[in-house]
Length: 121
Length: 132
Image 1 (cartoon, rainbow over the protein chains, first blue to last red):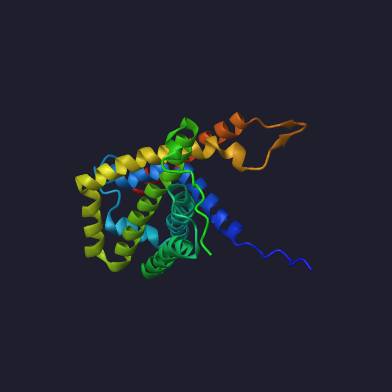
Image 2: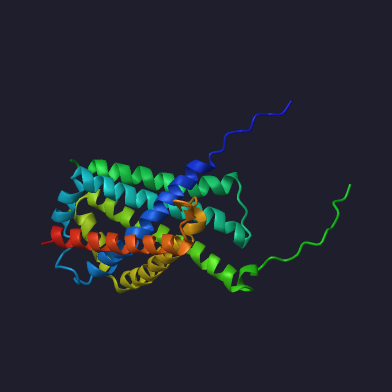
């Protein structure tokens, strides 16, 4: 008797990969410019990433959701892609590699959730 | 029983032999810098939660010339990610039909790139508004 097909967890990871890739494609360049180049060189406005301003921002539910989605989806996107691209460099997908890649993304998700809860509301 | 010693074609550097495969590889490897940038942001969030001194240390890290250089490279890689993400989108999403006609791939790519420009401008507007 034919075994019923085992449900795959691939669509779940692929969904996170697609969501993260789309978010990175839509806002990534400007976000990197703002936090990585504009803010440190004071190109946009003085002290764009000022502590009090960013702290107040991170306490707003909408900014919390944005920051959480950005950090975690970028990570899930990147770790999924790295997991599958390592195959092309001769490192073949296995349970260990899968745990390492998705585990990194999961750890980042937990840390982001903790930080965004710890800054208060 | 001994295992048969079959010939295995060496696969080293297979992607360097064809511009299409090279583009594929560059596209996939952008993920390394996307991950690195996500970790920089994650460190910022953690430092924010740990308090003002930690956050100040993170800002000093951002101002270091090496970090700025890293972000300039990351910015170029993200621009390539945006381009390549929408370039392949006609192949990664289900076909879209307008009436009887299938929407051409170039239209999907153009719409995606236009959306990215709008989203980036909106994000810049929000950042300017927040720091007014």
